[in-house]
Image (cartoon, rainbow, N blue to C red; front, side, top):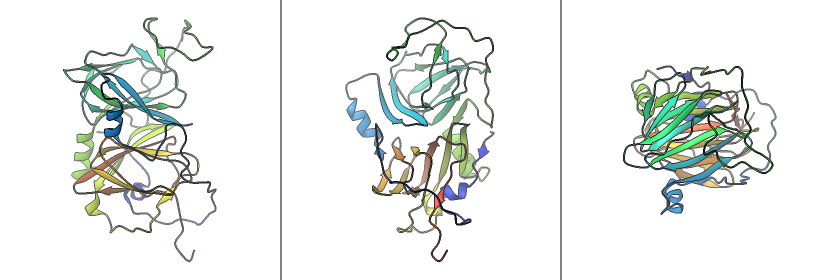
Amino acid sequence: MRFSILAGSAVLAGAFCYGQVVYAPKGEPGVYTGPHKPHTKLAEVKAAHAGHKSWRHLVVDDERLRSEYVQAQPGYKTPRAYHPDTREWWVVWDGEVRFEIETEKPFVAKKGSMVQVPYQTFFTWEVIGDKPALLFDTNIAGAHTIYEKNEGLPALGPKMSWYPVTMPTRDIAKWQHGNKAHTTFEEVAAGVDSGKLKGTQRIVEDDRGTANFIYGHNSKLPPLDEKNRGHYHPEGAEYWFIMKGQIRYPIEKVGVVIANEGDVVYIPRFTFHAPRWWGDGPSCRLAMNGFPYISHLFEPPKGK
């Protein structure tokens, strides 16, 4: 396996070292707009779509990233397409999905699989087996899709239409930064448990978006400090898809959230938060934001 270690993983795991005291902007915390809310519970999302065989549920749509739950039935297959300038990634959460990505051998992704495709690279995915598939799908905000054939194309917005074009040169399969098409929860978790990998692993790295696998045990952390407000991010939101166990989030202006597997927690910029592995057994969150190495701003210790 090849993964990029996230600098400052100790910060995200619950311990940190203070640096130079500087002065940063701090706007109004806890401002939620559009589809965003502090805690999206998968159980409630499923209940909202009860009776629907196939559905999409938008969770994040800000200036950086866009994420939605997608449920599709066996036999459903996306048209062969690519994104001209953006990287897309998925967490497969239920069912079996067969991915075909240009230059890669086809593979089947199951629960816990993390899949991605770089820009200008043809791909398609298909639900196989006898049960629906549920995916958590993420792309860069404002991303577009280019299709191979003029068949069954989705509707476009006002004053837009599908137009035939040519692209003389494509930058096919620019994985870069240690990215790879398919990573499973089991292989990363096993690497951390064995001590071969650190608790924070970079799964997706792009100039405009990242996904960090943060895995560990509450029992191995220092005692809970109820007064610890954690940190905030000055230039963008951060959110997490819970992949294992529970994660505890004290969120400025919101209070404490306990998120379970399949849930999503979203924190706007300027909002203090202190994520922590929670409960018994292992916990894991896939952290996503729009920067390769997002700034973490902490309150300085008293006396500084």
